[in-house]
Image (cartoon, rainbow, N blue to C red; front, side, top):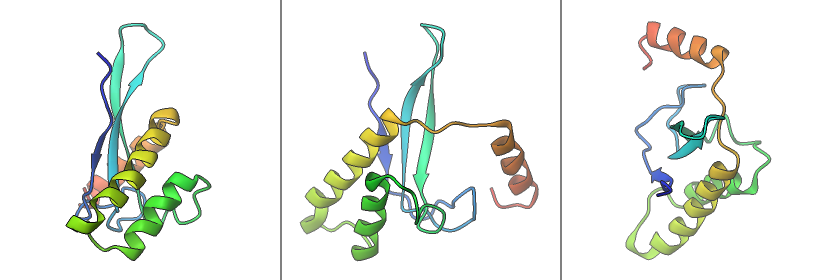
Length: 114
């Protein structure tokens, strides 16, 4: 069974890169080189850090939530389309996590930001 992406609209969550509120988060399955190994990674859209991201799917999330502070009953379809396109992009281009990223998170935790 293939696990699906889990999209989360969580503006109270903070960007691990700059500390700004994020617009959305998506958790996707990522497979290792071993056939039975898999894990899940989370990617986020930050209006500050990702404002120049080259992917139109990321820019779509930023544009949508710039125009729509929250998802209303009238905007569910539009939000769903934008978030689904972004989730498909993240599945095709999963985030990588390096030792530098771990060091940054440890420092942020030490500063009380996590």
